[in-house]
Image 1 (cartoon, rainbow over the protein chains, first blue to last red):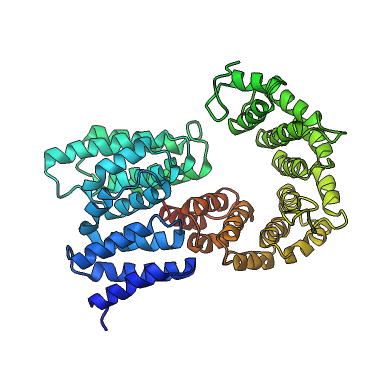
Image 2 (image 1 turned 60 degrees about the vertical axis):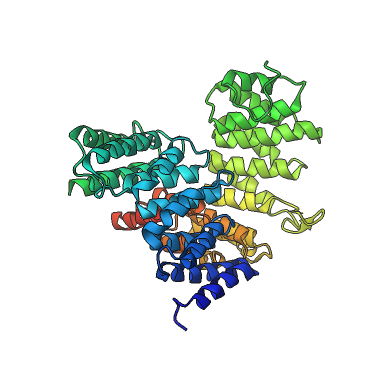
Amino acid sequence: MTPTEPSSLRHCLECVRNAATAEALVDATEALSTLCPELTPGSSDQDEAIACLLELLRHNNPGAAVAAVDGLVACGGTAVQPILDNIDDHNYGARAWAVRALAGLRDPRGLEVLERAALQDIGPSVRRAAARGLGLLQLHELPAAERHIVQNRMLNGLEVSCGDAEWVVRYAACVGLEGYLKQSPAAEAMQRNQAYALLRNLSEASSEDADVVRLRALLALERLAA
Amino acid sequence: MDDNAPAGQPISEAEALERLEQRADPSQRYYAAWWLGRMRCQNPKAISLLIEAVGSVLGQTGSADDLMVARNAARALGKLQASKALIPLLQALDHPDHDLREAAARALGELGNPSAISALAQRLRQPRAAEETGHGVRLNEPCEALIEALGDLSRSRHDQELITLIEPFSQHERPVLRSSALRALLMISGDQRWASALMELLQHEQLQVRRAVLMDVGACGWRPAGPALANCLAENSLKLIALKGLVEQPLMGEGNQAEERELLQLMDDLL
């Protein structure tokens, strides 16, 4: 039986449904995550597999959630809309994983959700994933006029993340800013200067008290200068 | 005082001090004590009120309400690293209330003053310290807190007497206590064998145990554990905190830059 046969999908879905232990659920999710990107994009089979992976983000099983995010990211563009349609407003654990998947997909359609998450989500793990994701959006397929607007929104979101009370969100903002400056060579000088200023701010002891954040900001500046 | 603001709502420093000072409503005092620690309040009045709250139950059993406030006050004094609180916290270590002893032990670890070591060790030497009491919820002594504080205060001191005292706890039936003991032994000695035992415990079948071990390894700053922490089945937010510990407080002194970059890469991948 090749893994692309629908019966194999049935089997994977059944294993997820019947998993009796946390460990069994991790194994079943890994199998489904491996299979999902192999299915025909847009087919009802893949839709069903994606829906199941999205459901797995809500299970409070970190191992299964990691595997489900990997599976969603491996599906590429077809996973974006289902993720956007299923953001769970009541479960910030699930939301953090969904935002993490969006960050991994790097699709500009994720902008609005990432922006909202960075600006106002109550969960630090959600804001953390959003800060990284905002910086990583790939814009080369957008028309120039739209790209400029999106770049501005990315940067505004990142600026908010840089001022977050949680060190881990500021750490993620360093990663996001590094990605932003690498990905957006076409950004206007003003935007680039602003991004550099934010990174420098995070690299200095006078403005940043977490050592690990300063180290990450310095690393970003060093890599960008290379 | 604003009686309409329920516990849990944001309050100002002045409001918190006022709530801690009054005696009519213990739940307001309890919340205020927590708030002052959480907000790292540096107002000297906060420290003296918190010390007073701990002092009010010393030398007596204390009412349930006063004890509740005293425990939170002890925790806050630890968070504030209030060096002035050393003596009352040492006294609280001998209080009949288990949870106050626990709060005091943790706070003494946070204060960072090694002169607390002998009192902590003495408490841990109590006969049947690690035996279960009541309905098996607690041990006779707050062993985890005592051991972790001893480790934190004796980092890289290679104190053989302490190692001998703590070592038996690394065999205790409670995995979380084993983890605390291994953490302290590794911190004090830097000996690889304790690290290996900790790494094994990181694979424990219960998520709750893995979480505790993650935090313990992070507190140790045992850098070779980086990849194992990143791969452990637990929440990324906890792994990130643990990895931050490895980056910021390497057990073996300075550590090198290549090592540090590997750890940062592990953290990037968990965001």
